[in-house]
Length: 191
Image 1: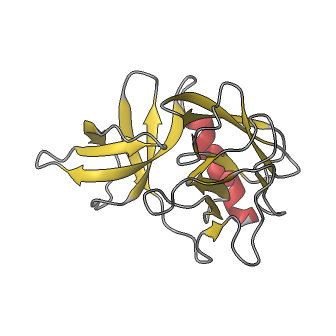
Image 2 (image 1 turned 90 degrees about the vertical axis):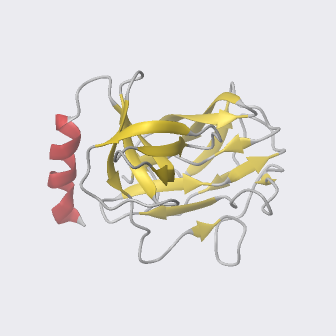
């Protein structure tokens, strides 16, 4: 893993200022080579997104997206890690705290986390009912950022915020709403 860090940093250093990386899910592939996808926990499908990667994409693939706030480009496909997703609240995994729970797992994915081969941690799922500003769960060592990460999410149909700090606490922050907070698309480097 340490051998990959210089490569990852070189890639990150080449991303122009103002361009952000997000995670999305392919809804369908168009005949013109563009794709339709969703970003984060949003259910709105964005159609005709340019694909810059030479990956064979299909519906359901999780992909990296670069955005400058105006345009979107698919830049690669995320592979599921060898150890799979760790579901919060499952046996042997971190527990929920402060009344946070999964939001209707019959419809939405359960809160979970994984780390990819490049050392990026990914969150997914939708949580609800806790108190905004309190810890929802704590990531174990190896899945924590080096310093505080403040990340944008979708919460109750509008913009929200997730804080993940060096101790591993995952905390929905203002302006999030406890009705529901989507973790899909939250990605950061493990420190």
